[in-house]
Amino acid sequence: MARPVEFDRDQALDAAMRLFWRQGYGATSLPQLLSAMGLSRSSLYAGFGDKRQLFIAALERYFDMISPLLERVRSAESSEEAVRLYFRNCWGEVHQFKPGDGCLVTNTVLELADVDPELSALAVAHIAEVEKAFGECFARAQTAGNLRVSIPTEQLAKLVMTFNQGIRVLLRTGATAADLRQRVEAFIQLVNFGGEALAEPEMAR
Image (cartoon, rainbow, N blue to C red; front, side):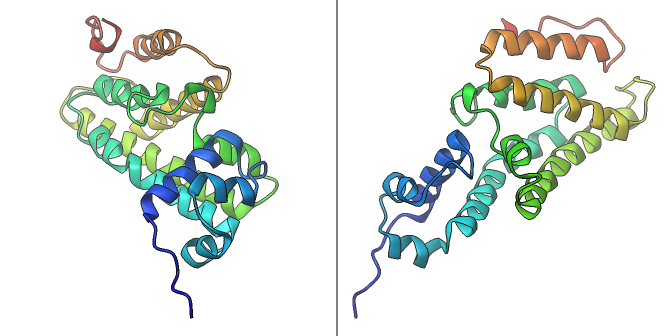
């Protein structure tokens, strides 16, 4: 009996994730996946199952990649720092993906909400985790007296995530990093988390 071909699972999964990210779930064919991952059909099935199971694994891989970022958001010294830190990820400064590819999570929700609610729900659950991380950061800042926005911290987190979804869709239009920075800074100044004049942001220098 032939032994299964050994391969680097993370490397193969990253290749599949990039392809799903760029093309979407529906437009990505099995032959394209096999070519990108450098696997035979039998190796892919043995290692990941079918295309749907591979997509779930790719989503989980994405979630694992940005988990450290969410921990940094939770522990940020200020609300402004948390927002800037998170949105720097939008234009590829963390994962080095093309801005025009948008966000894998947002893309999944937009593509599959009416097609595959279960897959869409996995992406929505991740969005909720990001919102929760901001909520925890804002609550800690409020307790420390460093947050003087009048709305509840849970609503403030929802506001940030509403802005986030707009930015993620904007990424698909090929918006420049400079434009995205300006939009983020305008949002921070509009909300004025600390209730004080803002210093020149490090990321815009």
